[in-house]
Image (cartoon, rainbow over all chains, first blue to last red; front, side, top):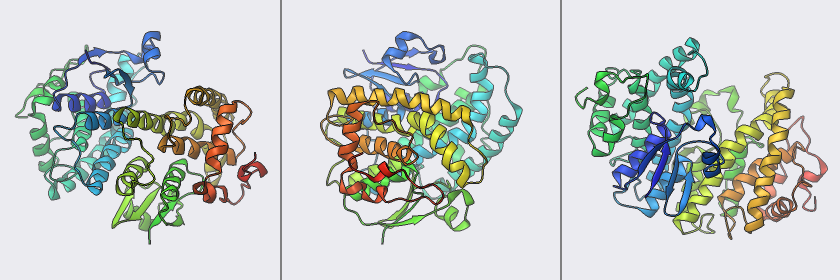
Length: 221
Length: 221
């Protein structure tokens, strides 16, 4: 049986879960409190992070290489276009969300509000929360601008770029940190992606001590 | 003419330079002081980072997507194997160096000693330098362990993983922060990669105020 070691609100884990579900690859989800540095887990993954995917005789870490592997070994349905220039644009956007958006928004909001408490690292720093709340506006505007010209974030086809973005935004939506009224394009895009069967397991996530708001799992938010 | 906006000691720029040179793609190198936030440069790349590659009608940012593009659009000589599992291993190691090694070693040594001074951000923090000097030992040992079983870092073939690792180590070697006596496998691997024609431009780099040590460009170091 394939196994994914994950934490529910990690955007990197959610991106892998979305890829697996879209490709209809069954996987057992195992919650892994990686910050407790369990020796068994560290043996599986010396980098000490999630996601870790056990599959096809391998133990894989790092979400971007995992998604590239899934795309190559299980090409249908495809989450990357065929043309090298379009593939570049998908990968650029995946890096944009997993690097820049993560650093400016997710780390400032989600990690301050949830991870610190769950990991016993004290109280949220309001300076960081303010910075994150300011930066997310710029990113939502940027997404809206892309979606003015494109059906999906990287072009005409739904790709890993959409999953990377939706992974971050859904985790932030779990703590009510996304203003869906800011940009109509973004709201429409999220409604489309949220209603896919691949999204169901993510909408069912529950983190003890942090109940999601009512709109989180509502397809008509 | 293709143009690469770069800074000489950036490992991400060096990885792209090595890929371009190995594939014999000619490119004009333009030094870009990205921390000065020149409006022209920010228009080319809103993320405000290097490398930025102008080529084939595109302005590309993010070193990993750039290298994937070069591999797909200019497949010879190949820097990625054909098998999806082996490709995963290459990409895992690229992430390992560009993420973990960068965070634990390069940021603590190179950025403290060089970037801070060049960018006018004050003096090196000796706590960080000590942390980096300690961590690089672990990474050299890990590389040595991989090279015990493999001719190159990811397997039998030279790949992007070797370029990612050599990009970081060569920048650190410029400031004499690599102990080549620690592991014979690593030294032998670096001697092999350093003697490739693709490495020449990197060995000719000069940063004002930071002359390289004599062994830096010596193939018989």
